[in-house]
Length: 211
Image (tube, rainbow, N blue to C red; front, side):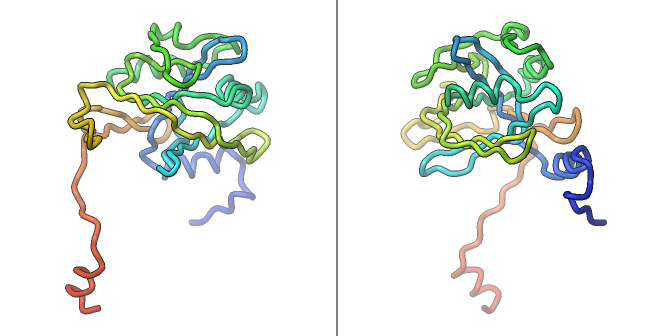
């Protein structure tokens, strides 16, 4: 079956994308407005986009009635944000910060989460998160009346010492981070189930396959 997305309601387009592009990593984004008020919210339209420069991308969707949430407004106003990653132990707190609270409410307080100062930007990181990226906005693109895409440059990466196996070579105990990702609806995916697959080299593959 095929859907032409310009001919279906937005809710159907969302379902088709969110139900098939899985798993999606979760960006637990902390921002700060011009008055210094802190906000936190999780987003699963997120990923790393490059390393030269280190780049991430966030897809921020707005409520058709209430408009853009604090996260989008704060990033567009200040150009700064922290992406925290979500271990399974923090999914309950993460879910609390997704509440549709009124503008100006500090979701970190609602969830009982402490913060630590960032090194290079004003918004703090979530202290309990094992990984945090301090970012500045490179650019933003309004892709529709209710959504914008923010491209951010990663200035600093924090990783809890207990997950760093070799600092000089940046060897990280990735499985021990116990991160979760998003599926569709209220379903989440653990990252513990994995397998190894070496990338083929042309010289070896072509010889083995008679090319």
